[in-house]
Length: 283
Image (cartoon, rainbow, N blue to C red; front, side, top):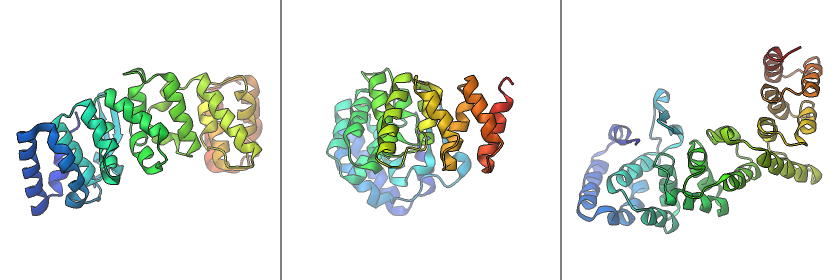
């Protein structure tokens, strides 16, 4: 289990060290029941500065847990240290989120990214499906592989995964921020994402930049046409996503469209992606 103590120690002040020592004493005396009293003071005591200053130490890859610690704050790290020490029940962990203030919710949701998957994890992922707070949604779903780790555990099934990923698309959250999600790409998710894109196109609205990345991983019957069209999109980011699809879907008509696009493509990143994937494809 990830222990943030080293990072917290590096940022100690006399005040924060004294407060943390007393907090541990309260946990030793009262157990997890002390957490509802302690968590509200963390943002004020430790601050919202970055937990990790060294980029070389910013990636946590421990067993099956992957987290980008660059988004963690000192108060998040202190919160995890106290949660690790207190070992709260699922009921209490969920309650800390449900009855916490804005900052407490952040702290609990960040901790979920590294804690073992439990019933509380799945309950709070469900809360993310319902929340209107984008910042809280991102703190739970992004910069970690929490959603990928949870799949198949404690009742979090593929249908729930798909609904959550559709919300990722609806909120225009970048797919690269939901670590490991595309290991679970599936045709039903592609259909859902394509449906959202079609609705937005009809309304003249912005389409999620990662639409083509999803549908190329697990194409539905309508995917090929969308991917071919994506290669000629007016926005380079959409063309890049479609070009990346050539690494996964090697349908002859798609490859032909990729070769045709390469002849006129002016964006360097898109050209490089087309060249790389076409070179790996049969002529």
